[in-house]
Image (cartoon, rainbow over the protein chains, first blue to last red):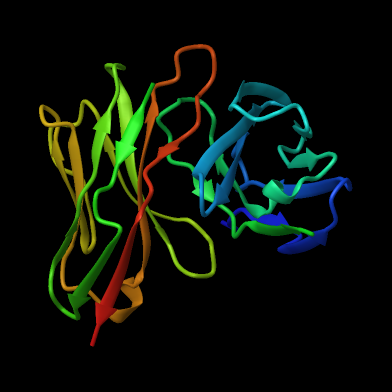
Length: 114
Length: 118
C-alpha cells in the first residue's frame, strides 16, 4: 500500500498570507489527524477528521482550519500567517474505528513564514 | 490530561550495542495506547512499536521491544544491536481509547536524540 502523502513538501510565505496544505491518507483509512512540530513547543495535535467531519480539535486559534473530502483526503488551512506558524506540519492517517489505532505519518510540509 | 516525559535529551551509543530509551507517562484513563516513533532528519515520523494498556506481554517488533511497566507508568524502548541507521530522534507517544467523542490525538514527549557511533 502507498503511504501517506503530503503536498507541498516545502513552502515559503509572508506574514498575513494564507496557506493550504494537503494530505492523502493510506488507502482505506478514514481518519486524518494533523500535527504541528516546532522546536519550542514540540509536537502538538491540531485536529482530526473522520468521514468528512471534524471529530476533535487541539488548542489552536481559529486561524487553523481543515476539511476532509469524501475520498478521505484532507486539507489544512492557515489564514493570516504569523511568524510563529513556521513549523513542520505532519498529517497522519488511521482506519478511524478506535482511538488506540496506530497513526501512520506522512513526510510533512515544512512551512517558513517570513 | 495526559503527559509523556522523556528524560534523555540525547544519547551516544556505540554501534552494535543495545540501547534503552526512557519514557514515563501520566494519564487517568484506564485504556490507552503507547507508541514509539522514529524521526530521521528528513522529518517523517516512522512508527516503530505499539503497546496497549491491557496487553499482558511486552510488544516486540524485530530489533525493537517495549519494556512496559504499568504500575510504574513506564514504557521504555529497547533497541537491540544498534545500527548507524538508527541515529534519529525518537518520540514516545500515547493516546486514549476512543470514547464516542473522537480521539484526542497523540500526546508526544519531547524526544530523545540518539546518535550511533561506529
